Length: 361
Image (cartoon, rainbow, N blue to C red):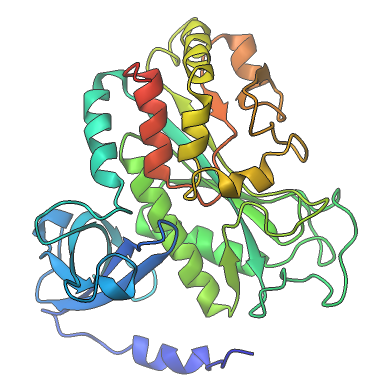
């Protein structure tokens, strides 16, 4: 078991007044895995109002899989500023891009290219809503609340469930939800998922690059909140083999044209474009080129087959789902159900806009 500390003791120190000219800023970034997040804090003598006011900083990239030991400095460029729900007051969290000494991006920095794509398609006003599924684990990496030497009852009563025999870890979920709202992240909801100890939160609608920024910071908050409860979060797309649902990051997407009257024609056109580049999207939709998603996209447990492209109205077993209300009202959005739970939201949003808005193959 991991060592535990008494969290109430920390409260005494967190209530100490800070000097008026001192602010703590937590720099947050995606490490070389393309999945995990790192962070460190510096003290500033002013309250930043936007990320451009913050100094560029650096870190040891050889310890995060982003540089070699002989040239280990990697630089943090602040891009999105948030209120700090842990330290409160004027303290901040800032999401950062990672770049090398020559200002080129590290391999895991997909924000820069995503931002360029979003600027090209800005006149089409691409909106995103991402549904982040995840699983809570005990410190021993066993699903939270599951019997240590067996399995819970079969799936059925857990989705959006209530009661101690059906829901595990709600305190973590509620704390995360409030933390996101406090920071300014556009979190729009949460629910218990089909597999016990599996949950989902939704971020959006967000336009352009804000989608990736808010989701990455929401992931950071999830890991950080769970840390306080001595709980582990995994974004593994298929954390438990067998007859259990996997975890995805279903992505809702629309343009101004899709949201206009008779926008269903634009939606159908987008689906036709997506059908022609299915393999490219599968490669982009998890950090390991589709290998993680292959365990999840089997054609079972509310998924499509990774090898086939499909679309349908209200069909949760299709690659692309058109919600029933959208089909009836002939306006709205489409849902891409292929992205894995550990997908990079910058890459997913980038690929959707390239294919649908910019007509790139």
